[in-house]
Length: 323
Image (tube, rainbow, N blue to C red; front, side, top):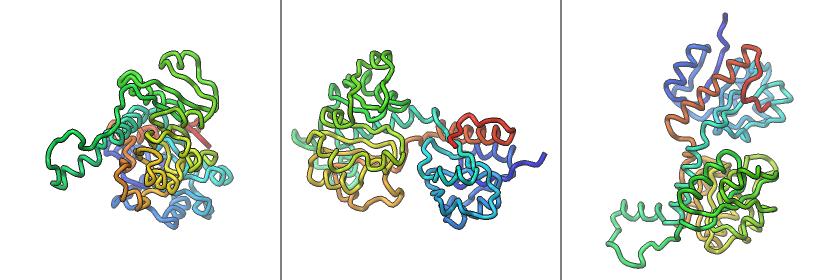
């Protein structure tokens, strides 16, 4: 039986690449460079399956490739807002993703950012590395306490719940949250949580706000200038969801004016093209999209992509098909 011809747009962990070679006539991106629009279009013309990542912008323009050979995009990641889903559907291309396997690691990063922003960890580390630390004194790098403070979650799916577990049971933080649909009563009881009727209500009450909502057109710039203005002056915003959920310029303005205390970011609108103004601010902790960056999770993600694509070529419905 002829193996499906596959292109993998970025390097994967070694166990995943070994399995790819077993099941596909695979081409790897050996120098790991970001593919251009022209290269992505060529991939759609020349391969049965393309396996992109969040850094590959599969736009409507990319999806105009002719003649079209690609039948499925096996996306390495949970989010798929980098893929024009309507255009993929119109071209008859299936799309799969990798849910479930990165829940704990992403929640770990959200908690790390919360602690870094609250306790000014990034500032302190930079001071020590620069050789400017002159010793302890009572008013040096005063941050804000975490234990017992109220955590507001925007989104209460798997990652939001994992964040609530760390915050509530690890740091004694009361949990409030907002989702479009009512949460199960047993889940609310488990965390002694309160589901509030609006995003705005969470922003007004929370000491920390952590975003765990999907990257979708309706969530574009969900956190804008008006909503940032509702937050407490001492509040901290954490984003490990999707960069475009937050209006960069509005957040930068709020951080500069100190209308909120700080932020912790792992994702950015237009990444990796980070707005240079973020680099001028001490009251923001910045990480380079590390949410799923553990060996265990990235291997699991790659294996899930392969499972989805193999099911597709067996004529079965892929377990994680989104289009």
